[in-house]
Amino acid sequence: MTGRRAATRLVSIDLLRAVAIVLMTLVHFVENLAGSYDVENGPFIGANRYWWMPTGFAAPLFTFLSGVSYRLWADAQASRGRDPEELSKITVRRGLFLILFGFVFNVLVWMPEDVFNWDILTLIGTAMLALNVARRTPPAVTVVACGLLVGLAPVLRAVADYRAFWAEGFFDYDFTVADVVTGFLATGYFPVFPWLALPLAGFLAAPLIYGGGDRTPRAALTAGGLLLASAIGVMLARPLVPARLITHDRLWAMFPPTTAYVLGTIGGGIVLATILHQTLDARADGRGPLLRIAGAMSRHSLTLYVLHHVAHVWPLWIAGFVVSGDPDAFWQVATPASTALAWAVAFLFLVAWLAERLDRPGTPSAESLLRWLCEP
Image 1 (tube, rainbow, N blue to C red):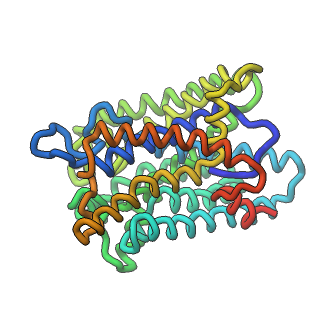
Image 2: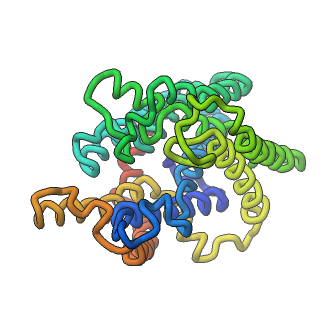
Image 3: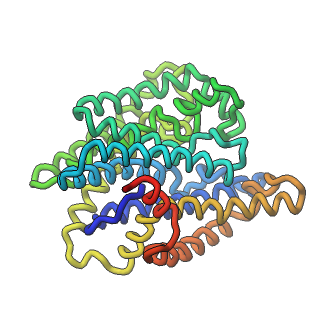
């Protein structure tokens, strides 16, 4: 997600990460401000049922790119002769920082009762620890790990009774060790099974996408195409799957992440990254205003992740408490979807301006804190 600024950045990665930020902002604003607005007269409930919303693409792209970026960073550091143990220490510190940061974020944004909701920050922090292991092991071991993470996820959800944790349409758990561990592994918003497979897949795919030679892009596109084909095959084979292992009525869903969804988003991420790398990164003129802004947003993705939540969730809590004494009073019913979408667009214009200002030396940000604490 973050790291020391390199002398040369890949435009394709910056653009993809900026796209993920834009998609995330649009979905969260509409879902949290208007997801259940005018339920009686409207045909949709929740952003995942607005057919025009890009739901379900930001998180897999974001997590996949975290593995890609880590691989490129680690390989670059190793090529410069940096001590492997020092790389491990930096990586572990980053992972622990993101996990702790994720808990603090949950308390301050989602309130203390959701501290163990296992959101994306704790996932990426956990991924940093796993990526440090992947860096030291043969690729075949990581491939097998990805297969187990994806393949065992439906089984674990069935054993844990996933539907019971999501009876109200969101992850609801008790403050017990069993529920907290189960949420981390299989039933939370971004559990290890299968979400950890995405950064690990990014780590494995990075040499194919960004390696030298004429064959690596073909290999990357082939791998991505096979994963997309596998996603289609899984959907076609749905009638053969035991009913007990099916925890969602749809073939393609994010909560829980169906097998087709995981395979398809990984495959799509590989194909997109490969095509953009071949078309953008080699161009000398590939740094116009739009790509410059995308680079700034990418460099400060952690800060923007926090700010976009604070900008729309805190006003909901405050308004609800002031008006009725219940912070949840305006949850998903504050505005029509069109108004929420307009606010999201306005916020994106604001952060596009802010992101470039955060690049100024000495400007405080979540990224500067991470570097100060985790890198020598």
